[in-house]
Every structure is written in C-alpha cells, then in structure tokens.
Amino acid sequence: MKHWGKALILAAMMLAGNAQAEIRFGIVNEAYPPYTTKDASGKSVGWEIDLMDAVCAELKEKCTIVDVAWDGLIPALESNKIDVIWSSMSITDERKKRIDFTDKYYSSLASMVGPKDGVLGVGPEQLKGKTVGIAVSTTQSAYFKKHFADIATEKSYATVDEAYQDLSAGRIDYSFSDTGPLKEFLKTDLGKECCEFKGTVPADDAVLGAGVGGGVRKGDNELREKLNGAIKAIRANGKYAEFNKKYFDYDPY
Image 1 (cartoon, helix red, strand yellow):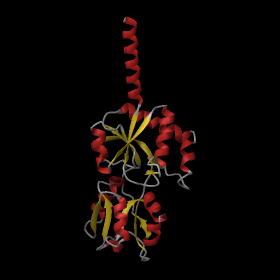
Image 2 (tube, one colour):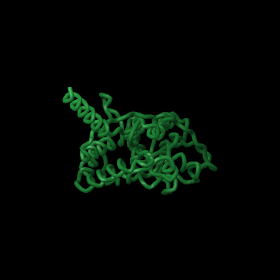
Image 3 (cartoon, rainbow, N blue to C red):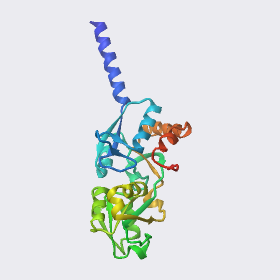
Image 4 (cartoon, one colour):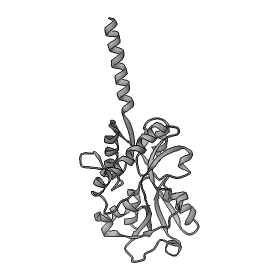
C-alpha cells in the first residue's frame, strides 16, 4: 500500500508538472491576415501561429490556443484564462499599466485604405470631414483621437472585417488599421473591387507603440524571459526568416 501511495503521489506530481508546462496563447477570434486566420477546417493559421509554433518548439513546451475577442484579451490574461496574449498587440505605455510585455517580435505601421477615387494621402487635407472606421480598443483608435478627432469622425467596430464591409458599401470613407492586414484585404475580391491603399500615418510611438510583443501578467517574469529567449533564439537560428518567407518579402522585425 505504501508503494501504491508513493506511485500515486509521483503520478500526481508528473501530471501537475505537465499542466504547468502548457502555455495558453490568447489569439483574437477574428480573421487578421496575414497574422492569424482560420483554414477550411477551422484551425488557426498565419504568421503569428507559425511564430508561436517555433517558439514552443524552441521551449519544448506544449502550447494551446484560446480564442478571445480583441477587447477581452487583457481581461482574459488578468483573470488567468490565458497565459500570454499573442495577437498583434502593440507595446504601449498605456497597456503596460496593466500587463507586461515580451520583447517585440515584429514592427507594425498604421495605414488607411479608402475608395478607388484616386485621392491619395492620409493627412488633414484628405481626412477633413471624413468618417474613419476603426476597431475598438486599438492603437489606431488612440492615434485617431490624438491626431484627427478635431477634423474627422471616428466610427468604431468590433472587428476590422465589419469596417471593411461598411467601407465597400460607402458608409465610411476610410478604414484605419495595421498595414499588413490592410494590404491583405486589398488582395481579396472585395478589396480589389472597392478600394485602394491611401497611405501610412507618421509614426507616434507614444500611442502606436514600440513594436508588437506578447502580453503576460504583471510580475510573470519567468514566462516573459522564457519567451524572450525563444524569440531571440529563432531569430538567430534562422527559423524566423524561414517561416517569414511564406508571408512577406521583407523582415517584419
């Protein structure tokens, strides 16, 4: 009986160790190509998923994906429903009041698309009196409020796809988001038919952030440093460049 007792304790410890080894990655539950989307089977795919797989392989840890609405990502992290936000979240001072971040794993510019009318540019002259569609709780929303709120109108959406639909229907004048997903939209049938790239806004790290990183709970230094080490390693060993070629013709870092 004593041996059975020791065996049960050992098995419980092993199970606990395995549970702790699992890292739950919070991914936004909407298409955000080329970073995250779903294939025909419903499996999450995209650049950030390939990055996650490479990081987890480097760490030799089991990783799982948890789908979360964009504005629920930080609450899900704080309530321990996920361990890391891995969903194109820019590193900003405002967000760092609530969560910690890994080192950046890519840099992101913010741009606008609009109707095919030949009017290019995203300055005050082009935006005056216009309506700009932006997903809620994004750095683009913060940027708009700081730079354009006195000349244009912001219309908020739960997802960027909803903004694209209204843009194509002529209900808004611009869609404002990360450059990568906007360019992916312009490759779709809807994007090709309705819209064109208008331009990239000037950088403002105070609101757009200093790159995109993984969000972890305040004080979770062990996980943050493990992820940092893995990101650095796959940059150095060529894995980052290897999967990057599937999506970009440049280094997004």
